[in-house]
Image (cartoon, rainbow, N blue to C red):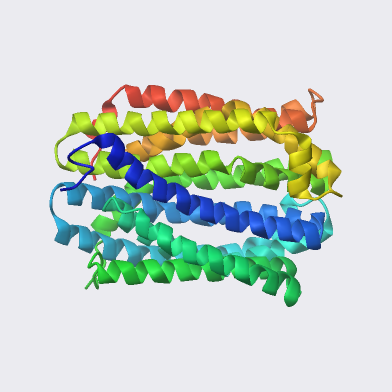
Length: 441
């Protein structure tokens, strides 16, 4: 019996969501370990460089999301229809396309690394660290693309546990490699990037082996460009949204660097990791929504698909809202402990960031959870139509609140919060219209 199609829906959703949440938690913990080690043992410039480079890793993952989201939706629909051989063929062709696309992204990013570093950094030293990080990360683009593709294959089958197991091994490896490469071999930011690529490579290898063993993939005799087009059509809107998100943050870093220096950029790095529970929870329920909606639409169970989507959104909002309240109330002393006793300025900026963005966390959760439902239905355009303009709005709004209004860093953080709240209201309203049931995968 497939629990997403039959039986108690709440239990089935949690069984899919919690491993996806845990997988995201491991990724954020690995990234936070990099940041804290660089902050404590190398300095603010290195931490700022890694933070800017990490947001460009978002860009790589966002581009790879084309294949993650597209494969999840198309495979889930085929599983719901009972066409498992076709699901296997979809996986094979989609992964082949992901491998080809990753090479283009890696080459372009490696060449643009110096310009990206110079644009977003405050000091020349931080820019050098950013460039070192980016060069390694973009060389690892094929690993990131294939890992996200294999995650999509498993999610389409409603299996988020195997990606969690593979991610657990990678997290352990990252924690081992970090001190060796960053401190022992004195590679600093480059060492952090190598550790990240290596750990993701292990995850990708383990997922590939598990997919082959479970007969979820096969050797494709030829590329089916019509099928690739379908995968891209579903995955591209959410991918484009993520790409825009990453690019906009380069402007945010430029503003915060001018308003508060490398310490302000480092503070955003800490703040994003501390609010990571919102992203972990939301992405977990987004994965559950995509699988549940896709499979139930394939089985012709539209009412169950509708119920699954709203359950995922409801659970995500409750958890994210509670976490936002805790972060709003967290004492400055706790933050200073995390960022280092000597980094008072960074701790103050981090506290300010968290107090302001806390108001938007429940809205962010609703947005991300329902993005998964839209994608599972094969209709991922609405989140893009809403998300892209209001994310781009952050650039002029942050500048206006920072400079003409004279609010400094407070204004920049308010721009992030306001845009998130607007998106978190409009996307549920659009989903409630019900036209997503016309999506095709």
